[in-house]
Amino acid sequence: MTSPAWAPRANETSLTYFIFLRFSNFRLALFVAFLSLYLVTLLGNLLTVLLVGSDPLLHTPMYFFLANLSLLEVGYTSSVLPQMLAHLLAEHRDISLARCMTQMYLFLAFGITECFLLTVMSYDRYVAICLPLHYPLLMAKRGCIAMVATSWAGGFLVSAVNTASTFQLSFCGHREIDHFLCEMPAMVSLACAGKDQAQIVMSVSCVFTLVSPLSLIVLSYARILGTVLNIPSTAGKHKAFSTCSSHLVVVSLFFGSVISMYLRPRSSSSMGQLKTSSVFYITVTPILNPLIYSLRNKEVICALRKMMGKDVGVQALPEQ
Image 1 (cartoon, one colour):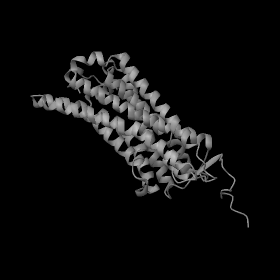
Image 2 (cartoon, helix red, strand yellow):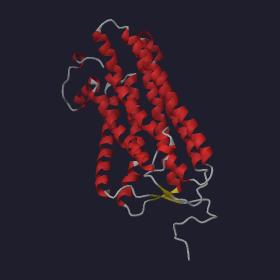
Image 3 (spheres, helix red, strand yellow):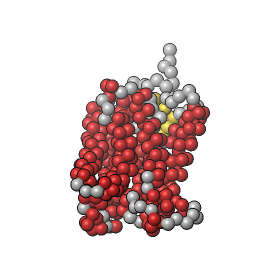
Image 4 (tube, rainbow, N blue to C red):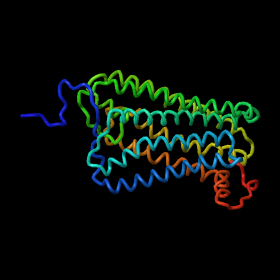
């Protein structure tokens, strides 16, 4: 009796494609929902980039970082959702080895870069509140560009290491991925040999790209809190906290969802839970970021109203 066509052969150590398992029975409803989320994400983040680039009042370090964050969100979601949408309508949910590697590389690169950039943004808030007299020097244009360039370069470099270590694994013909994207934990769980080495690489990477940046962010806000508590007036405290609130919300959403995916003990995690976490930080977080910054920031709202042709008294609005 012959084996099924999908069954792995004993001597098969390399693959040319993988197959995603069915995500849900409600494929059409999910397609409409995810397509809507994707379009709104693109619109919100690209609009943020356009506003920052076109309005001179937004040509400051904080908005320069925000524009880069929006670009990251566009790349982040675009590395996953178009493929996911296509598979929701297709009967054959296969992906070539090259496309799987590319998807993992870009997905990790944009995500890791966002970790670094959020850390840089916390440093910007620290300097603005704790060292205001040194802000023009420490956050000069050349320095801001260097920090952003380092974040992008670091993200793509670390992603290359993770992707290479993952696809050096032996899959022994196992091609069915219980996920909707080529994500590192799912690919490592699919391997039949070399998992321990890949787990070590993934753990070291998590310390470098998640734990260390989050620790620096917590340290920055601890010092910010100490400075704010020493401000005598309530209005001054409120103004200082208001400049940090949007960033804190974004950091909480992003790091909370990603850490629940990559640092949760594997023994207590089902693949269904991992997929749910992935859906959250791939679709929910990117769509909320521009809303959080725009709804809580009068300068962004002012720039949007000016773009729409409405006359706004910019000076009358309180600075955020």
